[in-house]
Length: 597
Image (cartoon, rainbow, N blue to C red; front, top):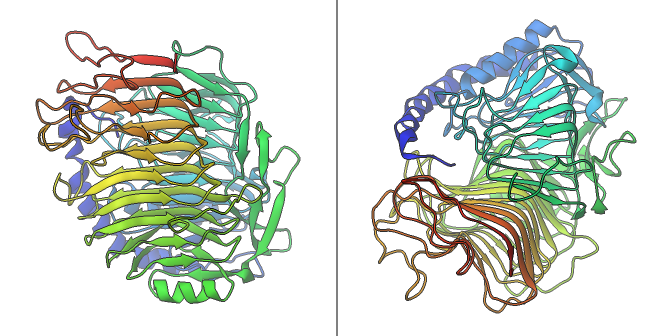
């Protein structure tokens, strides 16, 4: 989240609403569950997904659907650190409803294509702070349906969001704006989506769009990245700050739920694509394979432990995590190739015994998607470890994927982790992540929510699309493997180092670089990087935002640093290039186009 001094008071407005949201969730959960159980659902093979998954059918009255949507939003609208989690699922058909999307709420269409679920009306994410400020509008998402906004093809969908808000496989039959009435926003992510009209970025600070299409795009601020976009907006870095990569080198879209014409439920695993552009569903269904629900264990936070889930994995099942918070006394171990672990409604894994939440073997084709990892009070050495230390197998033909994986240390309570995400396996692809050491909420302070690193990469040939990493106490990203690729990077360095002497990575170096490529790396490339500072204590500075070895195989494209408050500075963008940030008397936000130059 980006926040200036003038906004700190408004952050406090989040805190009373947390209490309200938590109270309402207790009071309102049971009526919602009862309403769901009485639905006349069309599916003959309806899975039992628990009380916090609401499944809607076009045979239901619009008023009844709207009443349940509104109950969920009453609970989730202000519940930034609340405990309730919801998924709203729409079976194929047409609906006339208004869908406000609150915290920890995922809205999914269940058709084989987005156009199989048609929603006419407003689907919207609204700013969660006063003055149309969406810089705290986190943890919500929409996937897999078509929206005709109010006003028809001239209508506009409002999607005012910041980090950890997936927007996937959507078709907007009109326009979309990524802000609320010109207020601040700090997003964001869009993939495999079609916007018939205009995308209005407005004051969005940064954004990544991957494999999407639109009629037009307007707006830019600091760092806008377009990967695999057939018709990106006109203009070149640095004015406007557009970074364009013509084709997406390698990706597999996120697995998704679908229901066929006979009412059979499955999980679709899209095919691996190379050098791709645009959406996957022009020809109808997305290429790939469908895995029957019978091959999934449906986990419930109110009854399942790591041990019970590990037993199901050992029996050859995949995992579908229904919405809730899963307290884990040991890691979930993924050892079988091609295992799918898919979360609904921001299912949250919370280690309570100082262990990882998930660890994997060094095997092909694992896919972990749609999960929030929330550090426990007892420090974990790592929250998610992909492959054990020393992993060396090649997964080039069948990569490991992580889609929409989000990490939090503090905010909901004291949390501690040395490393959040550790990638030891080669050929791992991360497709959207936010790795956040909290700067507000509960359990927040330099000696309270402890976290050294957001992401550490030891494997080779690791690719990341949409890398958001903020506020950790040493390197935000430490990259030790070769042939790494990053497409879009957004990072705030920590707000709260109390003094310079306690925050230094080496003699003569102030602070810890946000993005560090290890000295022994000979090949690495990154596109579109923005690093920002908000120092809360005087006389604290950062020598450089990005620190890399100077070698021909290490190349960086399009970088910016921004000071969001008047204390301290970032002295250079990358190594000794770029110069310092300034706020007063005039704002200076240095940019570097290419490194080495």
